Length: 256
Ligand SMILES: Nc1ncnc2c1ncn2[C@@H]1O[C@H](COP(=O)(O)OP(=O)(O)OP(=O)(O)O)[C@@H](O)[C@H]1O
Image (cartoon, rainbow, N blue to C red):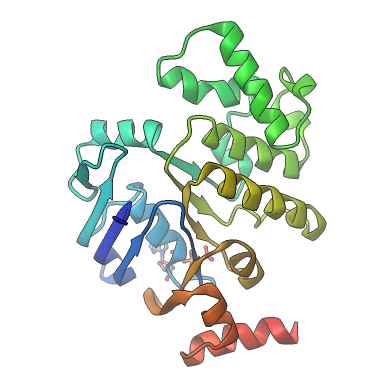
């Protein structure tokens, strides 16, 4: 199988200091990769760099689209990046309000990305938006409500619907469970796991929660001070961590 994303020696600097450096990995279609590490270890910098929100200073990132065409993401023209962001990618933020349009209805939030792909038929857009609300366990009767009338968990589920409705092949997620209560988190993670399985999307997810990685990720990267210090199958990393920093992370959740 050919990777959907190949990352080689990627680095991002803030002034003289590195936010992340020497990061290399391949991501395969349908694979969930979690990036874990303590606050300040470079997780969000790496995610934003891969998603093209920040310009990398070093390295290569190759994305293969649905036709097998390779795109060098670090030199991609802005218009091409926007097109891929619309057609092939999603980006789920930690705080739903950063990823939703709070002043338009839930239905409009979901159908907006379809409209960006050229769909115009009002009845069909509304029907699809209703279906997606139901898929993320929000009643289709709430189609005309604004996200501000939703709970935090519902908002985050709406953000997932907004991202997945266009059937992207790669979704970046930055701490998607970070703002949720523990009880809400568990249900959200179950839903996410089911949708990832059903849709076959590849996911790169930043989380500081090793439990989230355990539940969702096929593979995990552990970051410390901007570098990947350990990478591999999630179960192996969590059950038999090799790097002292990973051992510390794992033992700290066992003691919690
Ligand atoms: N805009 C910025 N300007 C300067 N330095 C930054 C900026 N953003 C992040 N950094 C630095 O880059 C390093 C990595 O930060 P980053 O936010 O990527 O870590 P993180 O692992 O995502 O942390 P958190 O879990 O707290 O979000 C840190 O030393 C941080 O201070």
